[in-house]
Image (cartoon, rainbow, N blue to C red; front, side, top):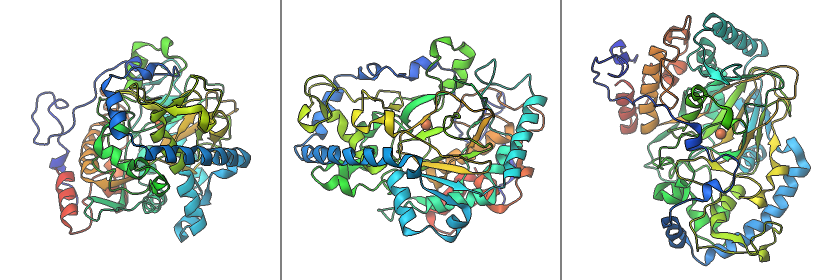
Length: 499
Ligand SMILES: [Fe+2]
């Protein structure tokens, strides 16, 4: 069923007073980056209210001592393994292999590391043509295009280009996403989710120039910060870890059931994805465009599709290729501190239980979850953050929502380092309502709902539109077509999407 045109009416804000029957999300407001980002200073995130000491005491029990002991021992070995393997630790498969079905070993490896590189789903020429069309779009709209930094954008505030629409609806990209979503499951059969129908989630694109040092970010995890412990539903994602003793080994990061309904944003965070090194130099305009980035949906896999040949040290992504073990450490870390107030020793005997203060290292209210050598020393991030191996245009990288990741500080290459951010996202009720609002914004040329508001591309020449989508799965992924299925859940989803 096609979504009727009448559903493309928009909010009263957008239509300048014309009321709408559709209760869509309000556009994001302005905001300052310093309000939301705790930067690389490990002390900034330490200032949590006293009640967070009570939260630690409430969660704490003696069984966590055994878990901590085991996790530190495992980390000792796993960090060494990652360093010795280098970028070979990152699973790499061809699209054909993915389509044929991944081997058990590869699946185990993807689940262990939380990251995967898929080559060849999109032809090089096609991906390069996307980049060229984006460049033309930027050129023809040069007086309206915004990006960061203002004077020489490396990342563009573009969500509605034709190239992005073609990429997000590309059959092989959707097939890739379907395969990756199939690695997830539900422990509770009543969970309202469909992992077989990937939907689009609009994000920006990057065309980073050689020599750039403005677009960078230290190690962090998307999707909330202190909420991991504070929100009861979100905390239930780590229930095995918090049960203590050896139970942490049963933690399943691919169980979608506790994730649906988890509140990752208790304090209206505006999470930034780049730019810590030049914060004081940002103009108000730049702050506006950098400040609002909290992903409000359930996004199991963040990802990008490359539009360039890019190697290590060429401004690419770095990940900590360690999923469950790193998560167990992150979740247990607030309950322990160095015995002698020194981080010199990582040995178990030099750390002790810490319930006396509200410190959750690297966590804050309205912040992203940051990690560094001081907050999370046992991860040895200075050695274990691993650059994505060489990618060609059309290759895709996806990383699990709990994976620690960063952007290289400097682009030392000689050609552009370019990607479109395209994650793998399933259908849930919340995601469906977001998809509806995102479609409405798309039709108006506005930024996607999670991103800074304003006119966006509404006055741009030759932006993407519905006519650019030629396939039914693509139309579904954009919310222009209802989904198959007769379950109550799918009926509700289709009702929400059609407005
Ligand atoms: Fe991120």
